[in-house]
Length: 422
Image (cartoon, rainbow, N blue to C red; front, side, top):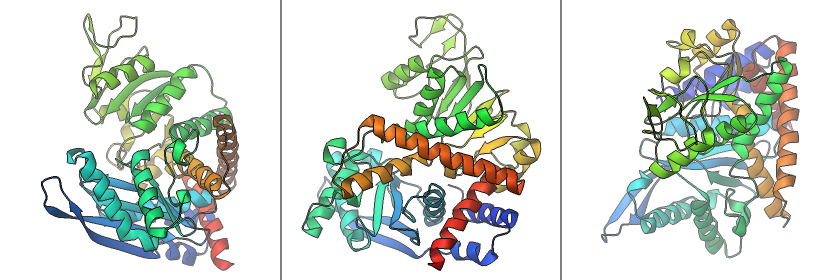
C-alpha cells in the first residue's frame, strides 16, 4: 500500500464532511485511532531456531460497539496501511449500521514460505500477544489478505485455551463446523453484485453491459461469476501476473477452471488457433496488463485487487461508466474528484465490499445467541441490508448533490458522531 494511504483516506473523509456540512471536529476525532499496538513476538521455526516477527493491531473507534476488522499476513504490511484500513472498517460498520467499530491487524510475513506448522505457530503466538486486547465483546478479528478460515480456527482455539472457556465469537470467518456462518466465503462478491444491480436500476440501464475485473482472487472471482451468470459480458479479467481480454466475452466458468489448474491466469488465453481455456468453444483473445485493463472501453470496471490503481495520472483515460470498488482504496482522492466531474458513477469501497463484514456480523450474532442460519437466510438478510443501505446512500448523494462516496462517508460519520455523543 502506498505510504500516503492514511493521508488519502483522511482527505476523502474531509471532502465528505465538507460536502455534508458536518462539524469539522467530528472528522478530526476520526483522524486519531483509539489504540495502536505494535508487537514483536517469537515463533519457533522448523529448524529449531526462534525468529521474531512484527505485528500490528490498530483499534480505530469503538463508539458503536466492539472493534471489528481483519488480520492480514504480508511481507509489506505497514502501520500506515493498517491504520487506513482500520479507519475504513469504522466507516463500513457504521454505514451498514452494524453494532461494531473498526480495527485492523497485520503481521509482516510472507506466509507462502512458511510450513503449515510454522504458520500455525505464528498465528498462535500472535494471538497470545494480543489476547488481552481482543474478545467477543471488545475486539473481533476476521480473515483478510493471506489469512483464511483455518487461521481463524487456530485463533479461536488459542484464545479459548487462554480464556479457559470456549469462545467461538472471538473471531469470524471460521469453518462452518466450528461456528462459521453459511455464505461467508461468497458474501463480499454477492454484496457488490447486489449494490451494482441497484445502481443500474437507478440509472435505468439494462441489456448486456460489458465488464472488466481487475483482480481474480476470492472476491474478484466471485463478482465475475455473479455478473457472468446474470448475463453481463465479462470481457477482461486479470490477476497479479496480468490478464486476458476478449471483446466478444469470456466464459468465466472456464477461466475459473483454468486458473484452478494452473494457479494463475497466465496461459489462460488463446493465441491464433491455440486455446488453453477448456470451454467447448474456439475464440480469440489476448494478454492484457493490469494497467491496460483499467482503460478498456467498457460499461463497468471492477477494481478488485490493490489500492491506488486509479490515480490522477490515469483517471482521464478511464472509459467505464461505472466503477465498482471491490478492493480497498483502489481510487485516490484526486482521481475520485476527476471521475465525478466526468460523470463516472463510483460505488465506493466502504459500500461495495461491505458485505464481508456484514456476514461477519451475522456470524458473530449467531455465535453469541447459539444459532445457525441457513445459507438462504444469510443471503436474504444480506441482500436486504445491502440494498437498504444503497438506497440511503443514493438518496443522500442526490440531496447533497455530491458523489456516492461523499454520501456514504457522510452517513457513516453522522452515525459515529451520534454514538460518540451518547
